[in-house]
Length: 169
Image (cartoon, rainbow, N blue to C red; front, top):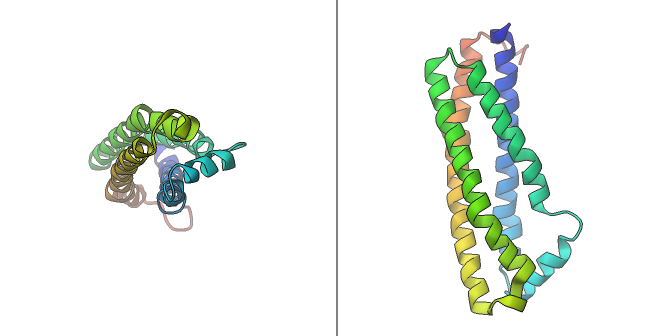
């Protein structure tokens, strides 16, 4: 039974992880250039725009699902040593990325969008913006390694190892 469920959990985890990557790429290449286009006015416009919902609502819902699916996949794939090890490293990197996001990036978002020019100089906002982007690029690199360098090969190998055919997955 475990071997029949494993490919489904693996594919579900990979789909959730790719959704996370897609959202992160959208933020990086679409939203963030607009945030820092004309500081402080662009930050004020961003803050005014994100009144009802914001990207954090998406990530705060999706990230726990990604982490839960990673834990489930590691536990289900425990007998597959090579894939398990790749998935453990992937899970550790995901946790590292999220801890870093919570500890470093969220406070910067608060300072940039909530406090803004009312509490910080324009130069200070620009410097925080540069730091935010640097942290984000590092987070994107960690997510890319996690998704494409670790999880994708592990999931592909697990699906093959369990003998799941294209008609079942």
